[in-house]
Amino acid sequence: MSIRAVIFDCFGVLITDALEVMLEPLRESDPMAVRRIVDTVTAANRGIITSEQSRAAVAAALGLGVGEYVDRLRRGEAK
Image 1 (tube, rainbow, N blue to C red):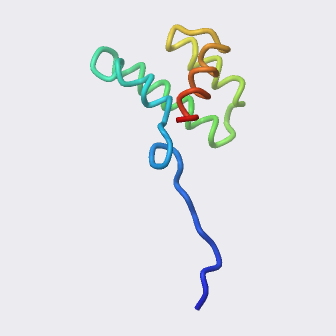
Image 2: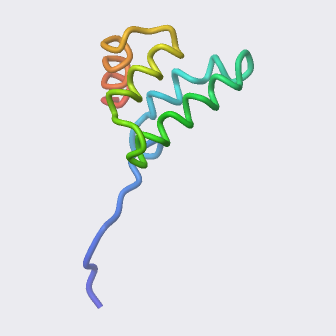
């Protein structure tokens, strides 16, 4: 039997999950905000909302501009 496929779980396993890093300070201070952010990202991953809507909502919840939020995601996941 030969190997026909290899599956990688990259997010948080092989590379840093930048969103998790950004959420860490909120986990104790505002767990409901963390829940709303996670729910927003889940909705985008399921196609319920667009990625643009998700980015805008998450950035606002974190008190960031969309550009800064996207930049932090890219920098964090480039490690």
